Image (cartoon, rainbow, N blue to C red; front, side):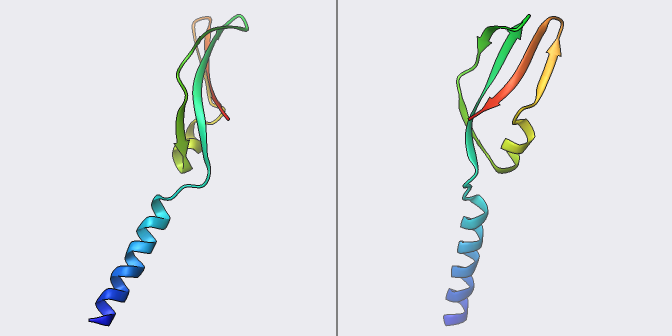
Length: 71
């Protein structure tokens, strides 16, 4: 019985540790044309790998540049 409880407790701590992010930022997409901001999305919180994938990335479509800005 004690082993089952201990194993469950350790598993719960492990799962909580994986889901708890400390490296989170508020990110938004800033769209510019010729260096002037034409649109900004509402900021959303991103953490961990999701944050790493978008932070600072940029794409250009026609004359509009879209950049993820995370603070």
